[in-house]
Image 1 (cartoon, helix red, strand yellow):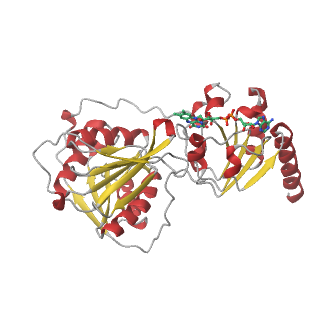
Image 2 (tube, protein in one colour):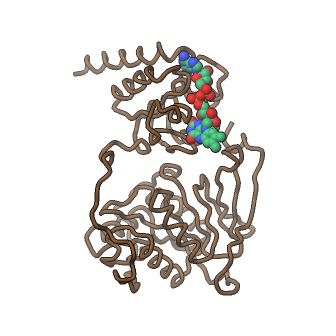
Image 3 (cartoon, protein in one colour):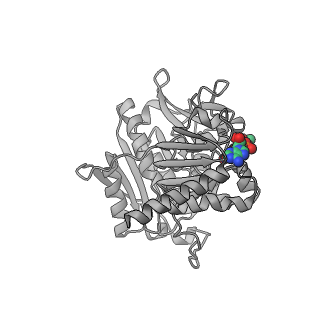
Length: 364
Ligand SMILES: Cc1cc2nc3c(=O)[nH]c(=O)nc-3n(C[C@H](O)[C@H](O)[C@H](O)COP(=O)(O)OP(=O)(O)OC[C@H]3O[C@@H](n4cnc5c(N)ncnc54)[C@H](O)[C@@H]3O)c2cc1C
């Protein structure tokens, strides 16, 4: 059963944000844009995932796909623009300005809003990262257009030529498809790892368009006094780990969670858990997997003592191989697991860890 089949149906609605100046000539808005999120010299990989998805939308509409890079006048900004072409953009609009050296809502909103008004793309996609969510909301309200957040599917509705943006609603029990019919651009955010990473093609060519926006440091009320890196910044990212082992309430008590961590360690992967165990404090909140946690796309996902509720399933179904360890052969996870081990996770997890350790020792 797929996530769509498990829902009661599809709901469509039209965004009804007020337009700042009269009606919109829909025909004047053309092209698909993806915000390439560049922060401290690093592009958030979700930007490439969105270019992959944007490519499909642009091809369906028969319009160009553009990246937009906002950043300081340095090599990282140039590299981000060049990479956007390698990941599928036909052209990249670049604003280079020292005011854009660090993300701040005001100048980024001004730059993106002005570019959108100047070039008029019909669709604008942003990653649902901390910065992307902030920027998307500010740009949508400034432009007075519709924004659909945390989408799980994007497609073009042939009848209306509009973006059909699907996202979970009502606590994840229903998928809702939202169209912005009367306003442009149609905006959507997508969380990291929800869309597949496109293949990078170093031979691709495209156009880089240098854009000018009048930005002044004096107009920005927020000042960056110093930068304190997140203590966890160097930790492997759960969302991008190739192997993830997760535990759920079936593990019984927090002390048993070390069995999950040990298996993850021997496999060279990351560990996570279901919402109840995150809420109970067995694991850090950032390790929660699912609709209200991280979306993952590992090559291997091992879920021990996790029932596989729909809110968990939507966060893991992009995994290549799912192994479920559960005492209940009829648990929902058995419907979408690649391999099911029916049994007690408290016995199976250490047995797997031991067997893998032995195998590793034999190889070395
Ligand atoms: C708005 C909303 C958002 C949510 N977001 C998320 C989310 O992001 N992520 C998420 O995970 N959940 C989320 N949930 C909660 C979700 O609905 C489930 O309640 C939750 O996923 C269940 O967690 P669980 O599988 O660990 O626990 P349970 O549902 O209690 O399942 C425990 C499983 O362990 C098995 N088991 C018991 N003992 C053993 C054993 N010894 N060995 C092996 N198996 C055993 C049982 O058979 C059972 O299948 C959300 C819910 C709502 C309403």
